[in-house]
Length: 115
Image (cartoon, rainbow, N blue to C red):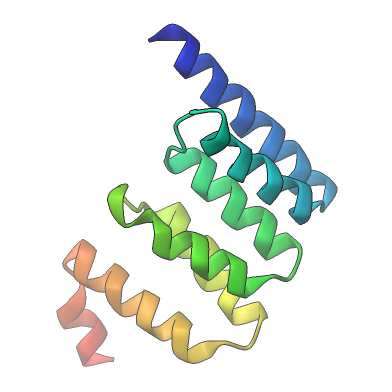
């Protein structure tokens, strides 16, 4: 439906704008508001919300959002953003788990094991 698509795109743009301003709290508020208004939280919404959390130094929130993505297809952007957030937050153990998951997803697990 065209209206649903437009609403999702508008929310994604607003969340991205919050990220650019460094306003992670408002970005998360908008992200949660999507559910309240029955607007689909697509992979783009998750990625920009994770990015906003990273920009705000909130690696715990970024990781929580990443884990919620289980019903969506996680992409390289989601992996790299959450790993960057974890790295900046000195959460190296969680980051290594995410990297192993990425290696398994891409079929590079044997390369990861060799390292």
